[in-house]
Amino acid sequence: MLNSYAVRSLIQFLLTSIGILLIGSLPYLFFNMKSQLDVLKMVDQKQLTNTLFIYDTLVINFEEYLNHIIYTLNLLFNDHEIQYYERGREIPLFPEFLDAYVQSMLYLLASLLLALVLGMLLTILTMLLPKEKRAFPKGILFVLESLPDIFVIMITQLAIIWIYKTSGFLLFNIASGYNDRAILLPIVVLALLPALYIYNYLLVSFEDEEEQLYVELARGKGLRRSRILVVHIFRNSILTLFNHFKGIFLFGLANLVMLEIIFEVRGFMTFVINHGVLNPEIVTIALFMIFIPSFLFFTGIQWILERWFQVKGDLI
Image 1 (cartoon, rainbow, N blue to C red):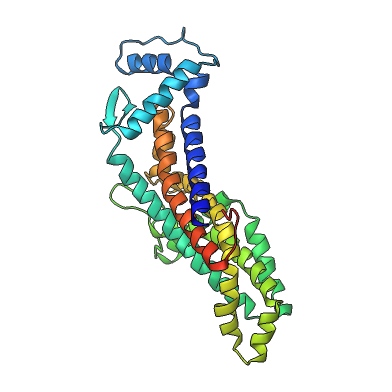
Image 2 (image 1 turned 180 degrees about the horizontal axis):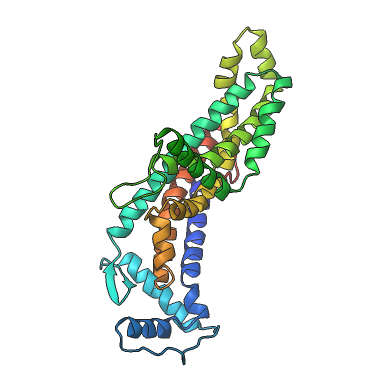
């Protein structure tokens, strides 16, 4: 079982890595990136002032595409310093890029941890209610899940501003400044919608498990309802939660882009947006920095769950 799982994981890793390399170099396949960068450097160095004569069209350039893939591989596996172009200068990518990565990942991981705690707590509190009284929290859940992500962020910021104007008390910083960073509010906002999704998935799983015979047996033995929920039902719902958690992780990662822009956080995602157009290799490096840790985490957890639950198949 271990050998087959290792082979399956290795194949998945290699195929995804190849896909990242192919995607990261796509601008060189469809555009004359080399000539565009040369013109941009001349403009930045004031060697060229009139660019009205310049135009570009879509092309299919396999040679430049393959050359850039090879160039990116050399950057990834050679030990020389990686640089990116910005306003006429070649600037070292690290440690600036790594600092932005660490900051953004701390936001993301802290928000997912908060979402997990909130989702589990809301699920248990709802399940402690009688069945006929669960319709109200389910209705609220449905309404909140329907709200757009940006609407939740903007309403939260406006609420903080309103509280500050009426009471003079600032709960959280609503944006990052020169010497001050918004920390708690971005984490809370980023955790809200993932918490609702976790709450929804767990609630469905808990209610399904509630109908199983082992729950009736546990009640017959006189076990408390809270113990049945926390120990028995929750343990059997872990697999369902994990099956959806990769999607929740990707959802949080997508919202991280919007969060950094709105809260003016100079993070990992905004760095890629600002510099990835002229330096496509940054996109490739960024994708690997996200993919490799998440792949190792989800693959390791999947292996543990397969041994625990004795199930097979691709859970993620």
